[in-house]
Amino acid sequence: MKAVDIIVELTDYYLFIEVKDFHNSEQYNETDHFNFLIKSLKYKYQDTWLYRWGENKIDKPIKYLCL
Image 1 (cartoon, rainbow, N blue to C red):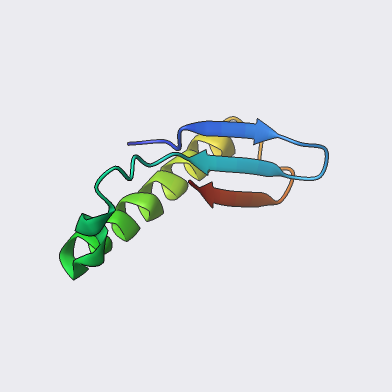
Image 2: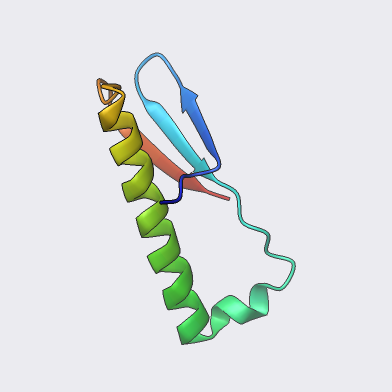
């Protein structure tokens, strides 16, 4: 299981932040690499949500930010 890089708890919601290194952004222009990125982000969100659910900390809305 993998988790997002940063979780920020704000007054009204949780912010899941994923920081990506885009020094070589050309690779994400190719369909295969872009699909891999989307799949990776999806599972990181899902796994982090499961961790938080297990801790009983899904009491606010969640926003997901990818940088």
